[in-house]
Length: 245
Ligand code: FPP
Image 1 (tube, rainbow, N blue to C red):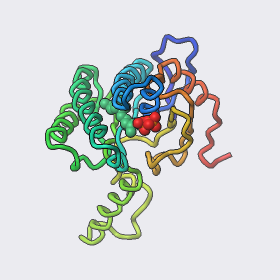
Image 2: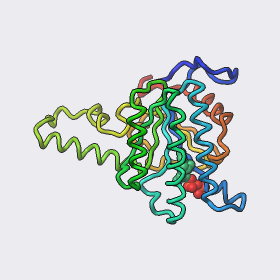
Image 3: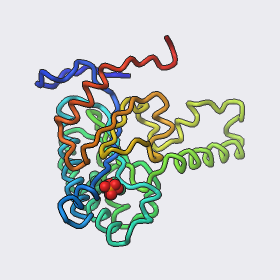
Image 4: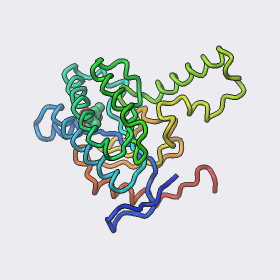
C-alpha cells in the first residue's frame, strides 16, 4: 500500500509515499557517548527528534507512523536509564496533547500494565481523547515485543475457541491480525532503522512480512527530516510485488 504525496512542498520528495512507516529509534546512547555525555542525554535528544519527525510526517501526509520506544527486553537496562526513559514518556505524552487539535490519533502498542500507574492513566486518557481522530495515527510501542504480541493474540484466540465463540477452522491470517495491538492499522510499508544496526529486534515482526527496510549509519538524534526524505526516495524506487511478478 502506498499513498500519493499531496501535501509536500519539497521538490525532492517522490509522489508515492508509504502509508505506514515504522521507526526504530536507535543510537541514542552512542550519540551521547560520542559527546562524552551520559546515555540519558541521548534519549532526551532522541525524544526531541521524535517530535520533529512526527510533525514532518504529518506535514507530508503520512497516515500511520509507529515508533519503537521501549521493548520488552529494555527492562534489562540500568534502573536510572529506564526511569529516565519513562520520564521522557511522561513529558512527551503530555506534549503530544498539543497535537490533539491537529486530528492525530494515538495508539499504544504493548503491555502497558507493567508501567507506573500514573503513566498508564496518561496513556489510557490520551488514547480515549484521540480515538475519533482520523488524519494521522501515531503508534508508540512501549513494553512491546513482536513475539509477545503474537503470543498475546494466540491466547485471546484460544480463549474464543474454548468459549465456543470461534471455530478452529475459521482461524485465518485476518483473525490473528484482529488480535494484534496494531489491529486498526495497515501493515507497515517501510521500516527505518538508523545507527548502523541491520536487524528488526522484534519490532512489528508479523506486520512487516512485505515491508521494505531502510538502514542508515546516522544516529537517531541526527535523523533529520532530510534523512527521512532520503529514505522516502529510496522507498519510491523499490519494486514491490507482494509475492506476484
Ligand atoms: C535505543 O537506542 C533507544 C531506546 C531503547 C529508547 C528510545 C527512547 C527514546 C528515543 C526516548 C523516549 C521517546 C519518546 C518518544 C518520548 P540505544 O540507547 O540502544 O542506543 P545505543 O545503541 O547507541 O546505545
